[in-house]
Image (cartoon, rainbow, N blue to C red; front, side, top):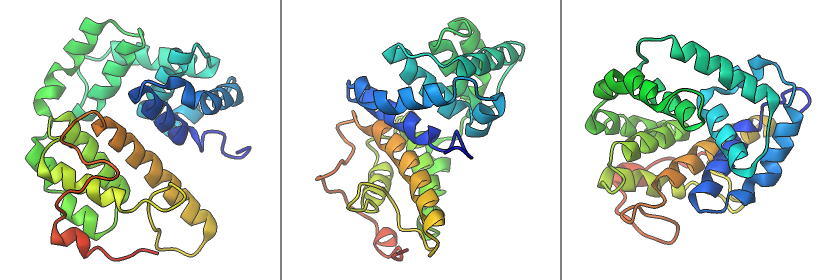
Length: 234
């Protein structure tokens, strides 16, 4: 952690997201407090490296618990200033712009104006879903998780394609709670891969958690043959 102070931030942000979704934000308090103190005087490069989505989710978790992190506040304020000068943003940035508005860093109406065109340019759910077979075959769990999130945001949480993708990632969970079976022997590399996959999958699953048509642990869904043939990566 001393060498990479931001290494565990995505996992902490995912924990905050999950805790908020189930109405128990305090569950993530120890992790959030740890990183808020550790990164109180961090360089902007730390936050830039993890990205606005992680930084925004982390900030929302801190706000819910009344915890402050000066370096994060400075990074978000600077980001909001830059975004406020733009005329529009690309589609993939729309969620982050609305996050800045939720945090009170840019006016809500300004966020709507910046993202109106971006929303119109978003890919249709069908165009997103068609990417899943290759991700399954190549065992790119992070890509599968990201696609699930996009499908849920597009209103496809109850669609069979999304259900099958969720069933697939749930099947990759190991007894210790993490996700994935990395095809490598180096312990450090395996740990990094599983950490990355787990934080991506947890965030995706939480996004679909409240939808009654989404399969969760203990539920069954029809799984395409392409998924059942996915090779064991252990």
